Image 1: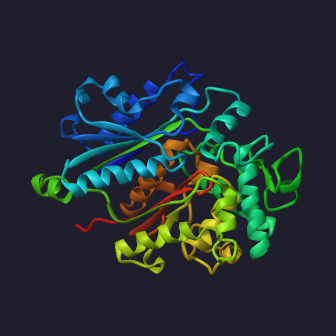
Image 2 (image 1 turned 135 degrees about the horizontal axis):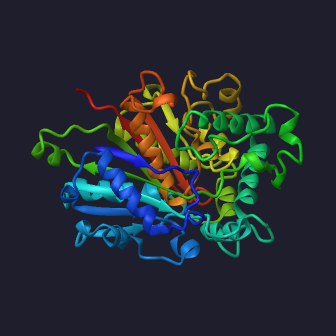
Length: 402
């Protein structure tokens, strides 16, 4: 990885009178500049985007980089859709191109514009990533409904305390205050570890167990990276990468939440395929969790981070609460999780999230994360999933030795 870039996730491009083409132009320029890469170096482009047609009416976003930057005209490019894992899948597609020797230098972008419609309409659009007609029937908000049901399943198997979910939200919102690109960095947030957490005026119920601050926000944003092969680096001896993708895992299961929960109802892990994606990444990187210095996980809702904690192996199955209570996931803890705020604090422009995680992991292992830097970080993990974990992508990102 030669470098990466993220836009400011607090922006509202529609209010600025801008559209998705402006967002793509910014992320292309920012990524090439941050990577010290000329457009002439790029050989292939991969774009992660989940909901372009629904939020903006614009599809075919693989062609948008060349539309806004004519110097990219003629390069092979494609859009990848895997719900909230669209960015992760775009990264995997670029890696496959590089490993196969098809190309040596890939520009990988994740882009999502979501603040184009009112909140209720946005929730309907986002629901397209579920099993339509089967999941969330009658629910006003699909995804809070779905992940409240995931929390219910945890409760059935292992027990769950809402206080631990609120503590996850509180931590990620606090972490976001140190991140200059985080959506909530200036928000006035109530105390989620005390009575304010269940105050229906300050933190209203959205669906089931989930309240406002258990949820990530509708977000406009983009992120990008430049990835190159080892062969490309040998041919360009003056170029030095900022990080290296050492391992990857990718699992896909059925769309339906109930499909997953019923199929694996007797398993200790609520979503065993998520665990398998993570261990695949560890195995390919030849590491264990003990070798990692931090993790970016997919906290679209507090139950998804709760799920991630035990599924990455930080605790035993059903024991995520231990890592919340003992400070393991906090800055300075045994394994800091989402030190820049994650999705709840940082923002969740769906197609960009998997790439934003990679950008932050690379910042951490190269010592470039600023106020949210994990001291001494050399190896970082990412866990990005789409829908009700139907598509899961995990990466292990390592430092590059001098």
